[in-house]
Image (tube, rainbow, N blue to C red; front, side, top):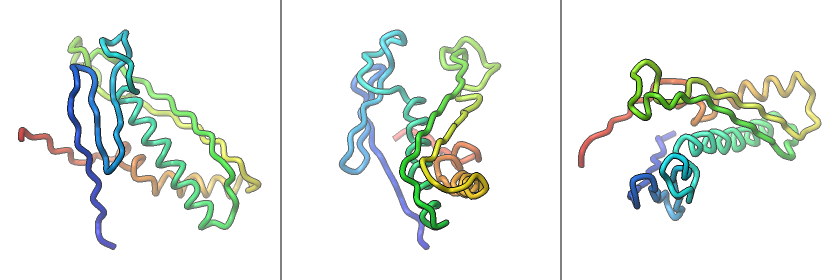
Length: 144
């Protein structure tokens, strides 16, 4: 199967607000007022959690269908811990990103616990966003 290519373009509208276009979709990324933003959109690390939730939802339904059980709905809770010291140039000790992301998925289904444990393992293994978060992915940033 050939690789799929996804892309996005972005333009800064202020020092905190960015408008991203992906296909025909526009997403506003901003910071809350307490961090100097205008609170016109979720911040970048919240979008990262949202991307993970969306991917887990899609994969959850695909895998449930493959395993032959009905998945009516998923409730997904995501929590991430981020030390802002590096972000604000106060320290080089910690990493800039999340130190941990915790996800709790509550499926609305009649499947038994054993089936759900196999389902969750397959979902986690096949989710592209989870894979990108867990494994080093080369990111090449250059001047244009």
